[in-house]
Length: 189
Image (cartoon, rainbow, N blue to C red; front, side, top):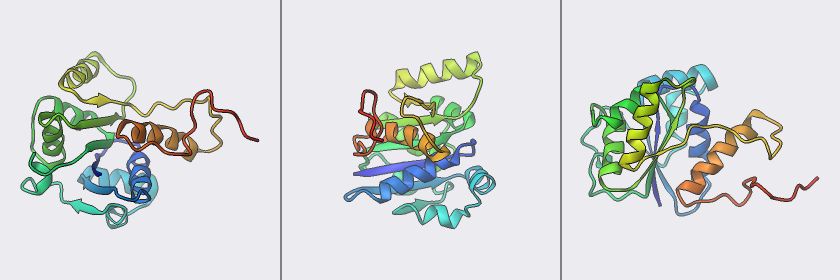
């Protein structure tokens, strides 16, 4: 599988990093990373990881300015694209077809080619404009999946909470995790 991962400048860069780690561990999966400049800064502030360290988690990495690379074309076959986290700015640009950088162009390609586009929108609270934009994206075929954790699996750490959302993303792209905590699953002490 070919999975595109975008990391924008919204808070929650750990979601994109963890998704890249989990994809790297899956045989037969190739990850393609688009890391925005604001995504680099936020990841540094939140995780102390430099851009080079983040890029090393992916199989392939592309500069956000490289609007002519293979991810900008529908003829390059991918299975899904996930933007984790997805800023309101990026979400709005995708909804309105403003393909001013590779992240937004690749998302536009996913939509026009009817491929899975999953947006982990990070903002709270949402105002009516945000909600209307999410509705517009859902009508266009995107999956809007804010990283809202469940607690029935009794998380013991922040990473347990992060993994809950990442496991849901893996389900959505067709790569369910064998160790994902699921509703109704028996507790093992």
